[in-house]
Image (cartoon, rainbow, N blue to C red; front, side, top):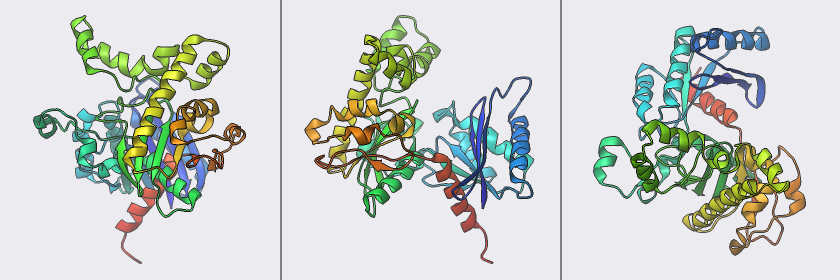
Length: 375
């Protein structure tokens, strides 16, 4: 089954065409809303041309959409119809930067190919197994009942994919341990018997780890203080989501540049690494407890897979757990899942590459296949 995977942003559209494990085409359409690409329909026309050139006589069988927020309703991928589209749209207030773009992409596909099966795959779905003591905030119950304020968690498609890969690498039926998805956005998840039981991102993707441009955990009273000092809601949103994290600490959100600057003696860059690695190490320690003893610690995503020095900084703070890296293994560059700890390490440290597009395509094929009558 040939699957077109769509990741719609407000001004961009990333796509990949897959047939099983084979990537047949991929690309990115940017600057949607400007003269050359006035809307998502025009972006899809461009994608259609590029895909048609790559596929030749073959055609797309289904489309899988990455949808960031599934709220409490969606705990698994679903076949899209008009009611599902409207249900996703009703979640827009919970993910105003992401869900509206996903809905726009869904409707653009519907207009262009009205009979094309479409599947929504939700970032939040994997975390629907969180127990209430993990997803509850200590605020009046009315805020949950009226506004849905609770921990949702994100990067779930990646965490689920990597949990399966880690179990396979370890020769286990299911995975129990801690997964650190470290990219420009970063989150860490506690997984027990293959299910998410806690995760660092919360009501929004802002909570938790130090990220490329996001602050992660912060005392809420700081925001009240800044409001009293004259900051607006938009000022705070920009501050916390776009100008904080590594960028706020080191002046850039690129981990390679931060690491190079730190190696050259830049104290701001070294401080950024110290803060980010300490924050992650604290979460790993807590989630080791949450899962009842981790089977492994897993690094994934852009930074997790490629930044050996940052992995060293994190694991170096976890001596109390008995973790020990093999620096030769840690320094190797590879796209393969691998163990990077020593034999003496209390439990293994892994690098397991993520592939969200593959996970979305696999889920799409399963949902579409289940929806079709048997021959």
